[in-house]
Image (cartoon, rainbow, N blue to C red):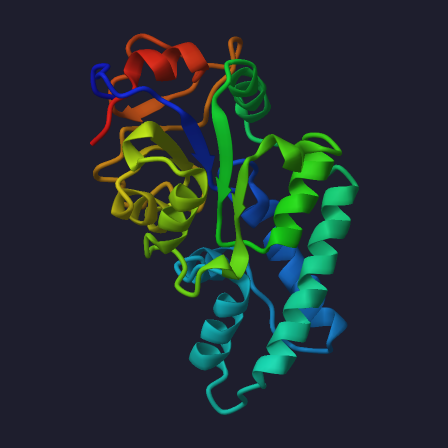
Length: 256
């Protein structure tokens, strides 16, 4: 990251899927397949196909892209796809309620530290508000949604990532300049969205995004790390830190 400037860090903006938890691999993918089976469809998404489909942001949009690409002669209605997506969301929430989706290393620690330090928190994601609430409730705390001043999720804007619209919406709700914020993302589309809004961004890689182009990111890390579980840094200057905490962010923070 760049050297500290006169701009003060005020807020942290978090993507959800792949950033807070590995939900794409461990929850969304199996939930889609369970919904397909529930509706008697012969569709099945394996890990490789799902990695390709993740180039399309938003679950309903991903379903529509899939049928247009792989079933062009059998196009279901938008109402059917919406119902199918609702079933998928129920399966997803059921898995979360069983406690089977842990947060990624360092996430809970950093959120707690940020709250204690008076930093403002926001969620900026293309996933549905229901999915966000379920993850926060079952992986953090019953009232974890109240930790976030703004939850920008789902269809709050019509054009999803990689467009910057959802970040711009969140910045307006927070009444902050982009230079006062820092985003956490895991994908190329997420980075394009945050950078398009002028928000400095830390990337934490996962299995689906390791080969993405992260040019322009402030840092590219394996995860946020823990005191006893240091991150691996792939791009950017971590100033000798081995895990992301508020002290590191304040020492490193600068706008684009």
